[in-house]
Image (cartoon, rainbow, N blue to C red; front, side, top):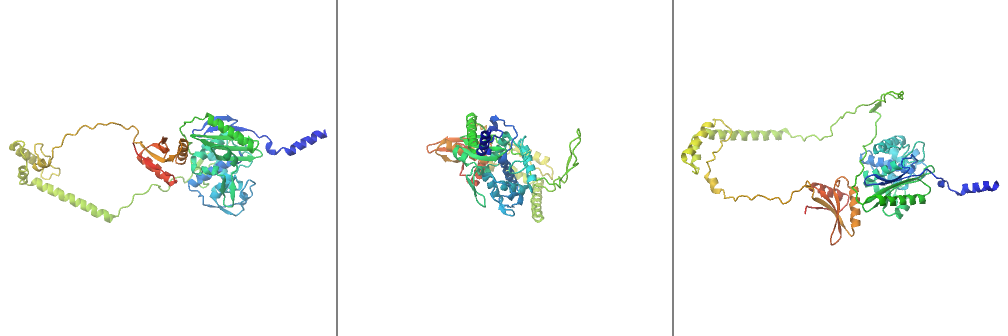
Length: 500
């Protein structure tokens, strides 16, 4: 009996707590269109651990884009944020640090104190920030996720699923591609110190891996959402409940391989629609009719939004024109019109003016017909008519007849090609590369970073004598010009390609 007890105690001491099996779940998704390629317990609600920080960072990116805060805003660290347990950056209460350093620490180091500081800087408190996280998750279609904090430490009710975290990872990738490189940095300057990536082993060992986020707690096990790109294919794999870092990475690599085998090589990119902006909700503008819970069978609470009417127009007003500039212009136009009308009336009422007109006329027809036509015109024209007199078809001015050259009859124009593309025969070249793979990789990365102006463009690699040209085709002239200017603003060398 004593031997059995000794063996049990010895095993309990040498077996790490991390080896205790946590519930397992996994999913593989084609990132280009969101199609699920493999799922295992994908809808089981589990502890997400630091995968939560993907949503924390997503909301931070959203707040920066909508002007709530900037990356250079100095954030004052609260006592609550400074007291968060590891993993942490080591912030001190009262310390001020730029938001960009907190974002780097949360994305690369997975620092809990940085995540809490971000939440408090944007929403005032971590609880308010968690409510915003939940609104954003619901808008994304994460139907089985509930966030209670910004860092992911174990808390009752703070749960998610492999499917929901895969959806979130896809939104991070396509909704804010300008920040996605944060998740693949091996090291980053976090202001107070340089931090190392928590998932650099997989990034270094798996070809094409470029993110996204790790997570670990005792209750959750070793979690990971990873994305990798090879050629035209991009796959996202999610694992909940790994037994160790090594076994989790091995399982994720196996799932990514499975995804690349099942994902088609050619697939049109269908980026997910960005959820509606879930900014701050002011307590002054939203009033709930009743704070009491409704009785069974009663109607739901009614919410009245006060002061929601638009108070100022965002449309620019027309530029005012000074009155001193308008008056002389109108007066001058009126004077010119009156003088011209008077001259026309005088010419129409003078009988002696008619013989001069007839005298200048070539006589292709008898004189009697010309004079009769002029006399009939004179009788029909009223004394004060403003309408010009219609010239008879038989009358031709001699000067005009002398000057008019004999114009040869125009030949019928033959159309040899009819464009059915609506003018979309322009393109943009973004460089020449030594291999087709390199050109296709640059095209895909550029399309992900500039989805606005390159939406609908066709990625085309053209082989030449000196290499492979990476082109975006199927654009209008204006669209190609806009895309090239936006790419040049991103430090991407490009030039327009005209119709051949």
